Image (cartoon, rainbow, N blue to C red):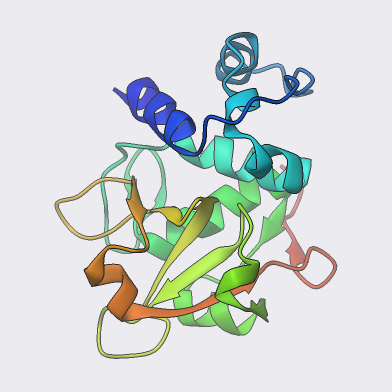
Length: 185
């Protein structure tokens, strides 16, 4: 199921043709499969404009599609809340430790204009009548991945949908130089 959702997202991000990206250094099975099938080439400008780290953030976040929401959750095996999901992805992929709450993540990151969004940036929403009460990771083409609410699972959604458009609270970029490095495991 996760693979089908990942494939659908990658194909929906664009059908522009470009040279295939080099094989990922991580060597994990999903990345090799995606690269071998040429899916990265199909995302066109998105793949050409972002850094390897941002692409890796997005790709790794897709591996968690279908993980259930859990209030206060920070791990895939038990579930994530929105900020726990973002924190886990940045820690696992980039080795950066973001604050635990969505509002703290907003305060610790660089404000950017919505039109400057690139895959891997954070998008914030006012879902609880307070600023920065929800966070997700921008994946490109107006879509973001997040852990939405109790009873739901990590999923990709369109920021243009009325619900999200009305509640959009801002975009932020994680500055690797300013973010805390996660301790080595």
